[in-house]
Length: 103
Image (tube, rainbow, N blue to C red; front, side, top):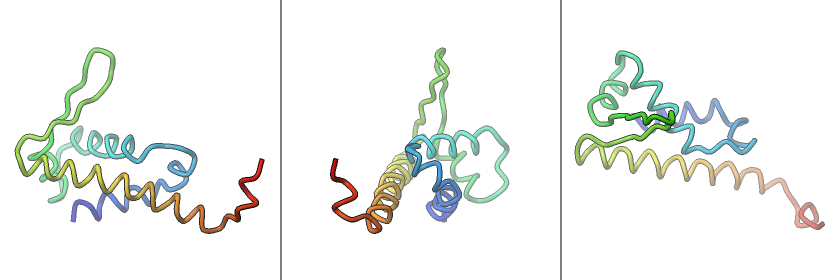
C-alpha cells in the first residue's frame, strides 16, 4: 500500500528521473511533504507513526525510523527507489544500439 503510493509518485516524475534526478532525493521529498501536513490517509498516518524528520542548521534533512517496523519501512522504500531508478535506466537502454555509445 505504501510502496504503491510511492510508486505512483515516482511514475508522475519519470521525466525528472530521466533528467538525472535521484529517486532517493524524490523519496525524501515525498516523505517530508507527507510529514509537513496533517495525515489524511492510512498511508500518511503510517508514515507519521513510523518515520521522523529532522532538519539541521544548513537546511539538510535526516529521516529517522521511530521503531523497528519504521526501519523496515524506510529500508523497503529506499530499496524500491533504487530499483525504480534501475528500471527506468533499463527501459531507456532497451531502445539503444551499441552504435549509440561509440565516441
